[in-house]
Image (cartoon, rainbow, N blue to C red):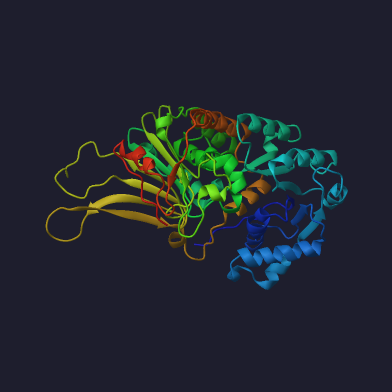
Length: 483
């Protein structure tokens, strides 16, 4: 099956921070893949903007190197690379001064979509927004893309939203969370709302519990300074995992429409109960396998920030009252895996009480690696000798189901094209961000007030022992982390 690629409108996309790591690893290679797929019109252009003094030729050379490093060799035919590079330009610019802004303004064309990607530190968002308006570069139809972190608490999130709102309407602001651009995350909505099979069972009457796991094998690496100030709760739970929880728990929107979808997500966040301290487990990885421990990585032997956190969360609404959501995320764990697992309850009456092998039905949505969905169901174990049950997966790997020729777009590719289309469905709204921080802040403040220390855990494991007990005391267990 070959997916249809619909070209977007002609655009001028300015990438502030175009010489940075995110632009090199994700944004520019992603744009090349969209160009190669035929989604960019021939007239569309990408303009790099950064402090570094260089000309357009040097920027094209840097972009060529990024494509060689991060795009599959089979996808980078020489003539296609050259055609893409010819659409690139560059302006050296001072985000807090006057240099470069007139030159950038001169490059902007009338009658095309204008989008501005703020791939810079949040402290520069206000400066960029103000100068785009002061110099007449942004108009009422322009869009800005801002990267997380969207603040580090409720107060800073409100301040950031107010800064952006001083120059742009909410309909122009795209707060990007790359998790929402993953194919499987969007398929979660399709599975729920396009199939009669699941939606009648998607409630506390039929679902025993939900697990959301984002596990990584790497440590904090070069992000030690950032992680020491944020920890896993701020870095992963407040944004990525919160959004996944919302998509699972939300009510059906009246239409697949940005406002309708985000209204329903906001209702979920506001329905979250405060989390009992007994339902929180935090950890820090130890040294092992020739690699330093967390305290060495953040260069702070007294650090109390967490590289791992697990929570039991309740959504107090009609649909989910009584069904726990278990969230866990961590660094330096056994395997790299992100998944959502919906475990269904036992049948109200089983005719197989005396038969061995029965296990719950589980719907597993794999976000990475090997994106796909499988449903664990019970069948009779083949062979003679009476009735024996065994669990098997009804597996839909996207690569297998759609064919090898169907390329699954990277999350950044998809989201940038949505910006050009003006589709905000997969982007966080300002009130969502603030509601998420309003729930998160008391949890963090609580463990800081109690003086809680994260528990050490060995690298290459599933995390702290108490995280296992978080499930065991409820008669449940975590799914095994595997790639």
